[in-house]
Length: 148
Image 1 (cartoon, rainbow, N blue to C red):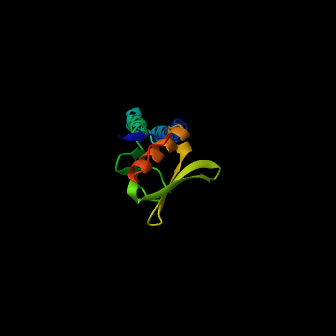
Image 2 (tube, rainbow, N blue to C red; image 1 turned 90 degrees about the vertical axis):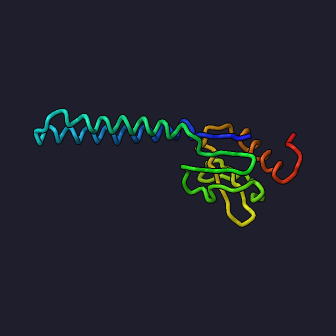
Image 3 (tube, one colour; image 1 turned 90 degrees about the horizontal axis):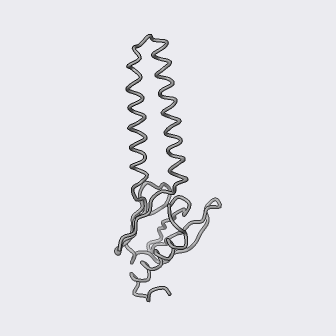
């Protein structure tokens, strides 16, 4: 069983907002260049196309998974400062609930001393459901009964 988790809608909206703001600045600068340098107005097409491509690309990028849980282990991508990005479930010693800057997190502690810390607010997931799913994967990997 594979479970994929995407970025939270709030984080996606922030990224799209920043992209739109950057695009607006780019188009404004291009408009000023057209006016000051007496360029043809067709020169505005290039920045507008770049902004549209950036927006579509960001929407596609944010809709793909950032955390994947499989029978063998987990993978994390596109999230910074999380620690270890992937590991087999057998390499995970335990899971603990933590908090980082007031944000609830799940920390997977590895047998080799490494950790993976996932801010639950960054994921489009129910916190209880996510921790339960991770616990089930850990229990199966370590030969324990299913959680009740």
